[in-house]
Length: 200
Image (cartoon, rainbow, N blue to C red; front, side, top):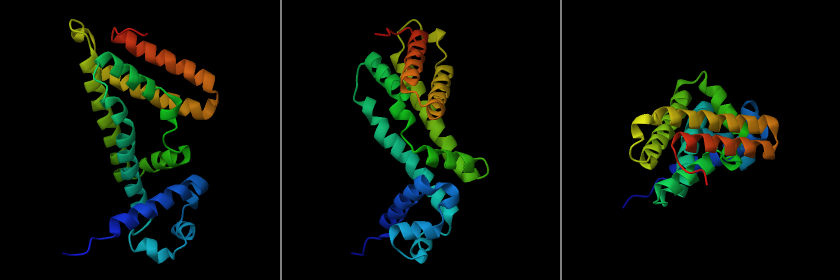
C-alpha cells in the first residue's frame, strides 16, 4: 500500500498562512517571502507546492467558496417547514454576521483581482450562480399554492443577492450596527411581502 500524499495537507497549511498574511498586509504585501516568514519556512517550501502567488490565490478563492457553502447553507437545511426555513435564510442572508463572513481585506483583494484574472472571476461567478440557484429553489419551495404564477422567483433571488451585497458594503462604510440591522429587517420584510408570507 503506497504512502498517502502530504501535498493536500501542505497546500491547505500554506493557504491558511496566506489568508492570515492577506488580512495583515493586503494583497500587495502578501509576498511569498512574507508568507514563508509567517510560516517559519524557506520560500522554496511554498514554491514547491505553488508556482506563484496567483496560483495560491486561485486555490484560496476555491477554498473560501467551498467553506462558505459548507458552513452556512447546512444551518437551514434541517428545517423542514418551508415558512420557517425561508425566515431562517432571510435572517442569515441579511445579517451583519453573514456580511462579515469573509475578512473584508481578503474579499476585496479577490474581487479586485477578478477584474483582470479570468479564472478568479469565473470562480466567484460560479459561487454566485450556485447561491442564486439555491435561493431560487428555496423560494419556489416556500411559495403557497395559487400564487406561484405571480412570483418571479429568479428576480427575487437576484434582488436578495443585490441587497445582501449592499448590506455587506454599507456595513463596511457605515459601521453603525443599529442602522444596518434596521435596513436588514426591512429587506427581509420586503421579500416576505413579495412571497405573501407572514412577517411574524
